[in-house]
Amino acid sequence: MHRYILVAMILFLLLAQGRAQEEDCTSAGCHQGLINKPVIHPAIEDDCLSCHESNDKQHPDSSGNEFSLISEVPELCYNCHDQKDNLTVVHEPVEAGGCLDCHSPHSSEKSGLLLGEEDESICASCHEMETDKTIHPPYEEQDCIACHDPHHSLRASLLKTERPELCFECHDDKRELLSSDYVHAPFEEECESCHTPHVSKYKNLLIQKSPDLCFNCHDTEDAEVESKHIVHGPLKETSPCLKCHTPHATNNEFILKAETPELCLNCHNSSDPSIFDMEKRLKQAHVIHAPIEDEGCLICHNVHKEEFPFLLTGKFPATSYTESDPENFALCFNCHDSEILNPQNLDTGFIDGKTNLHALHISGEKGRSCTLCHDVHGAQSVHLIPKTVRFGKWDMPMNFKYDEKGGSCAPGCHAPKSYRR
Image (tube, rainbow, N blue to C red; front, side, top):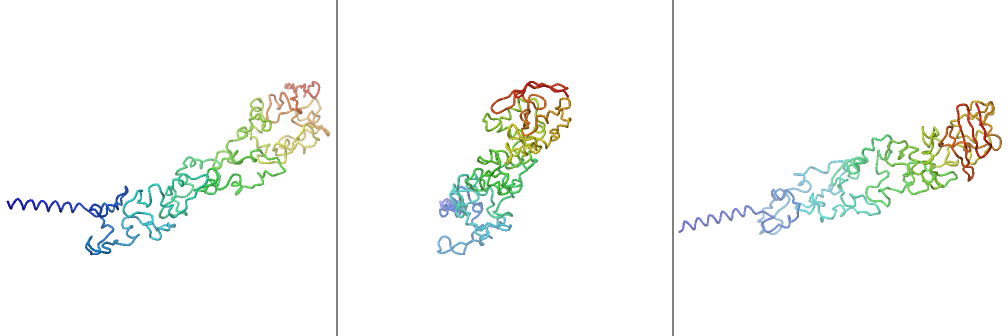
């Protein structure tokens, strides 16, 4: 009988010892609250004594501090974690050794054992979170570490990498633009030249509205709307620069959205009388003025403002008639020989025997403008002679016929005539 009692006592003691060995600081009914959150410090799973040591007082019966940290923070943390205060720029709490300003030593609702509720940013406890019309998504989500290292960095503002590479981590579609033929210098060097990283009152997080932003670098003179000059219509609209230019990069000179004349025809394809329907005119033409085909619209037109009508880069008759002076046709004579105004010159190709018909048409005080016979963009016939020309409100017929030795016309301005070279 005594033997059975002895065996039972031994088994009871062994089981009690096993349960005691299984229990620790967080499971013995005392400190469970320290690990009641989803993310638990791995050191706790190993042993509380990884960080704490006894002060030789009987626990839990003694009063006062029965345990203390085995070393001061942050040295204690660096026993396991890599040192985070040895780069050029150090976050102020880290520099002050305040690991526990941001991290819980035991458990947390958030990864990294960060303090605060799950839907709150620890950064907001020190940094004021701004708001405005446009908010950068990572900033709005308070995902600060998407861009910033929370401990230390080699870069100002604790940025994780240099810009624009940092921006490309999300804006990957912009990375390939750097290989374009023409790259906007701020885009190549510093995104923050034009964009703010957090909030802005302007679209696309711009630091200023366009065109004010553009004028921080570019001369305002070329795009001054309040001017005695003729001003291109888009300059009077909202965000005028972006009507024609891309802000980042392109394969087109002047970082244009497209080559000319395609770019120009994006607007000049309208039935609006204030915007000439050049697209329709060029599609109907069998012969295109060579400068347009070879170099586009900019050979004759300025794109911002100009002192001459239609933004022409040189002087050209604004009406049907003008004095026969080469200066009045300076635009045309950038390419064509002004000797066509000399009655003695027979090299123009438009002669009847020994009569210079160019000089005949453009003579005296009432010389005719080129546009009374030619369409300066494109026409159905050779020499840019159209079916009709605009004369006041009248589409005057030309009835032009061409052959190898000359031609004939029967326009509304004179009787039928022919010429032979």
